[in-house]
Image (cartoon, rainbow, N blue to C red; front, side):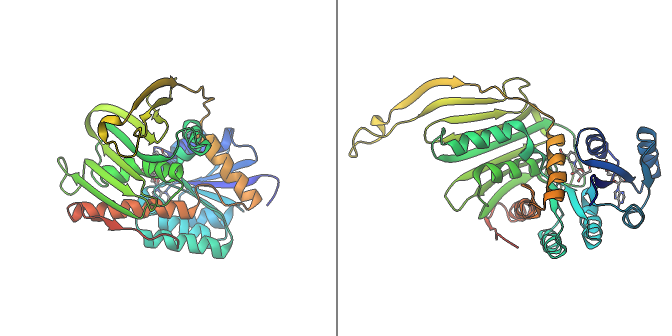
Length: 342
Ligand SMILES: NC(=O)c1ccc[n+]([C@@H]2O[C@H](COP(=O)([O-])OP(=O)(O)OC[C@H]3O[C@@H](n4cnc5c(N)ncnc54)[C@H](O)[C@@H]3O)[C@@H](O)[C@H]2O)c1
């Protein structure tokens, strides 16, 4: 590898331009070499925005002709697996947008291939690089909340209605990745209910419950058929409670010194439980663009050989949850056991 990590980007649709812009302008040590898209119209947009950067319309060409160190895959979700497979087979480091793949079998294969080829595989679990989520993790790990008992996430809005993937695959990969990151555990079972009101077989609203080996619980509610625009995480600990409100532009984290005290003596019941209503603390946060931090981390890992925080295994864990949610919905809410590891 030369002084700069030479990067190609596959996919210049809705999200690709954001990654391209960050690689080109915000990530130290990265060189944007080539952009690839199978759509001529989108490739023309890439050329217009980045006239100095090469453009190609197929992945084979991108892999053979540009002496790349790494490839960012930001094409549509069904193409992640076939494209990432070629990238890893070519011995290049690979960043794949979320969800890593559409099946856990495919994700397992990518993780094993990356290990065999000794290349870094990273998944675009963007929220793991969000300053507020990292602060939540710091607060949890500091013990300020006591022991975390459970958390719930709400990602609700009216639209954008999709017809090919359900609301959970579309909206919840972020929440699942945040929940696994904050709790530092893999779920061992998942149950979910959902309903398809607008498109046959495509759930618009899903309520999913993740159960963890420690007994912790995470509930994730996603919907594109809701009057509210909400992106909120509530975390309940034995000492304090925390709310992360991503719709609040200034005050994203609220720590409530609220809780239920121990009974005054072991023989007493409910009436002796004491409720505590203390102060609210709003920590100040230095917000940065998470995409720049995420891609800087990828480039650093390509160079150092370290495993990214959102590595292939974490991508696989999220895909397993998404898959299990679909299965549970199909079975009317039955809990589905999850495996861990490759
Ligand atoms: N992290 C986030 O917050 C976030 C936000 C939006 C999208 N995404 C992810 O980014 C990815 C892209 O989403 P999008 O909304 O930009 O999709 P999109 O459909 O707008 O764009 C995908 C682009 O990839 C191209 N493409 C598809 N297959 C290809 C192939 N085999 N070779 C070359 N080009 C190919 C298409 O022509 C299209 O231009 C998805 O995986 C999505 O989940 C992530």
